[in-house]
Image 1: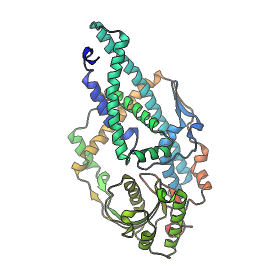
Image 2: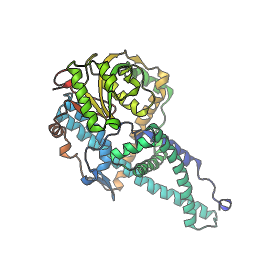
Image 3: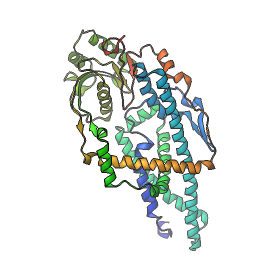
Image 4: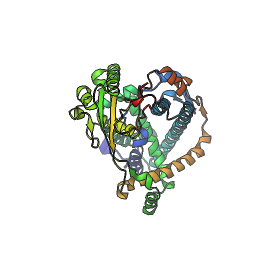
Length: 423
């Protein structure tokens, strides 16, 4: 019973390290999931393992989950002529191998953390036994594990709740995970594993990675002014064809039909938006968007993507159809405002994080090299499946000049053919 427990609280530094680690791994473990992309392989698990770290196999589904957004983005650039198929495949190959390396590191760090975690528990148990504890070693070890797990789970629940909120709610989160072929439990298990590893790494790496000082932060800001130029605001009109309201196939067909009428001059953009758009916020204004995004996270995601894409278009020109995970979008650029410089106070913490991460990554790489010799590591699939190459995919998709899928943070638009990219 609690009143009879003779075990004092575990070292506060350990729990502080866990808490800090959760904050640090919030971005690395999983993105907010605002722009889901299904894997380009129907059954990723059928590809088998891509690497082995000791007795643990890393499945292709884990690589594809991280690689898929780059695949969509690169394929879109090749389709619109901004990148050759050879360059696209070279980029995809490099990214495939980079992700495998990152996953191998994560797994090796996790295994090392488990070993050290067990050693840490044994050390505490030994201390209690030497102090004359009236319980068996197994009882003491079980209690120590329970205390550790309590705090890990508490921070984990807080971390998960924040990510659910950023994703727009539990329903949308489940929908995104389903599109990725992940169950909610599987996603949680990955976050839990990542958080456990990061808490261990924080204890190992933090003493070797000092925080940058005010002078170093200011010097970085002064020497990289172009990095802190805020792009001017994009004003545009758009028409939204929602997958949720129409179904994905119908949304695409409807978008193509309206797009063809627009580029042929059969209807003006404002009228087309009022008659066809599924975006109730802008529909009454002829699809006009002139302010910053606010409100629904899903809407904010595809509005941000459209703004990025339209920076490469000319004012008044109908852009090609853009297909997001939420539906299809037709947009026309009105204007782009002048760039402005972001004040130092607004980016000071961002610079501090960037400089800290650079030192952290360098020290993490050194630590990886120091422990990898103790574990057998094999890469079993050093390249992605050939049928996912840019050249192969372009040959399969005859409609790619009109409609193509996109992924954050960039939407690219076909330039071939007449205005809007239509052949």
